[in-house]
Length: 118
Ligand code: HEC
Ligand code: HEC
Image (tube, rainbow, N blue to C red):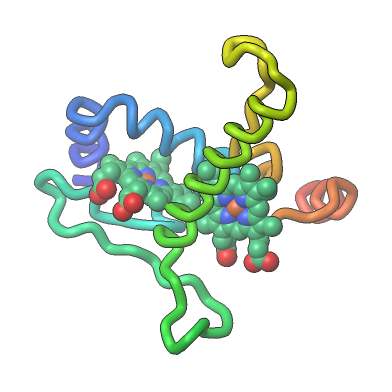
C-alpha cells in the first residue's frame, strides 16, 4: 500500500516529491517524521506533532515548522542574492542541509560527527 501511495505520489507530483526527498535527506529523517498519508487517494495527510514545550497553547506540527523553514530558506537565498550581487545561476544556494547536515536539530559539526559515528 505504501509503495502504491509513493508511486502515485511520484507520478502526480514529481517536482514536489523530489523536493521532499531533498528535505528528508537534509534532516536525516523519513517522510513519516513530518507526515504520513500523502493526500491524493491516500486519505487525509496526518501531520506529526513536534514534541516539546507548547507555544501559546498549541505546539506546531513538524509540517508547520517545515513550512516556516521552507519560507525562511527562501528568504535567506533572496538576501544572499542581493548581498553578493551574483547572477542567480552562479550564487551558492542555502538548502536545508546547509544548516541541518543530516540531523533534525542542527548543531556543531563536531557534535554531529560524534553522535552519528556511533
Ligand atoms: C521536514 C518535514 C517534512 C518531511 C521530512 C517530508 N515532508 Fe512532505 N511536506 C512538508 C511540508 C512543509 C509540505 C508543504 C505542505 C503544507 O504547507 O501544508 C509537504 C508537502 C508534501 C506533499 C504535497 C501534498 C500535500 O499534502 O501537501 C507531498 C506529496 C509530500 N509532502 C510527500 C512527502 C514525501 C514522499 C516525503 C519523504 C520523501 C516527505 N514528504 C517528507 C514537510 C515534510
Ligand atoms: C539557517 C539554518 C536553517 C536552515 C537553512 C533550515 N533550518 Fe530547520 N532548523 C534550524 C534550527 C537551528 C532548528 C532547531 C531549533 C530548535 O529546536 O532548537 C531547526 C529545526 C527544524 C525542524 C524541527 C525539528 C524537530 O525535530 O523539532 C524542522 C522540521 C526543520 N528545521 C525543517 C527544515 C527544513 C525542511 C529546511 C529546508 C527547507 C530547514 N529546516 C532549513 C535551522 C535551519
